[in-house]
Length: 40
Image (cartoon, rainbow, N blue to C red; front, side, top):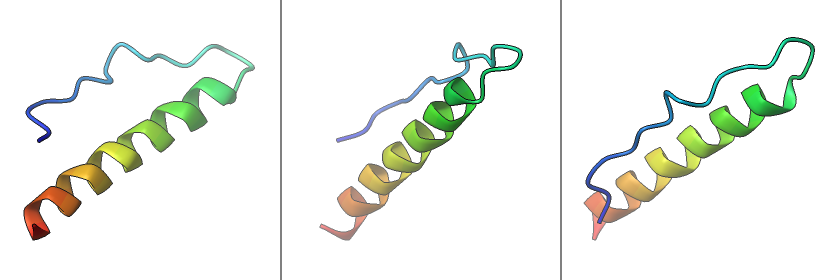
């Protein structure tokens, strides 16, 4: 059960797009887990 998710502390590093990509991927997975739990 997802109660809360805080990914605000992940900040971009100038010139490095990896952190932005990983933050977006993490948010996508959290939303996916949340929606999967709502279907059950």
